[in-house]
Image (cartoon, rainbow, N blue to C red):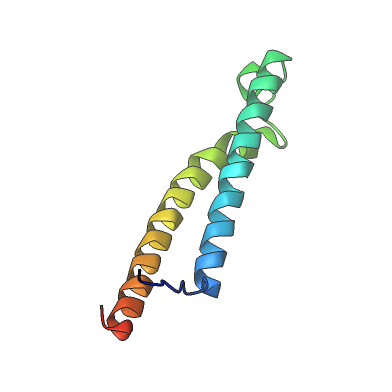
Amino acid sequence: MTETTSQPASRLQRTLAFTAAGLVIISIVCFFVLIIGTWLGAGPSQGSGKGIWPTVELLPLIALPLALVMIIVLLIVSLVSRSRQNRTSGR
């Protein structure tokens, strides 16, 4: 049986992974804040489009696509790294 030695994740891979996860978590929190705020009558559609509500409403629209792009970049970086590792080990 062949032993596989996994290469540790690079700093770029860790940064992309944690940043994407953070953006997704913040977006989910914003979704829940919007749902609860609208339920309580303080949402942006009820006339309180001032203060933090525009940010809470806009953040998921920007953060989720950005997180998706970061996950795709992470996948590409991981594939390139694994390809280099396989090439050097002679597989």
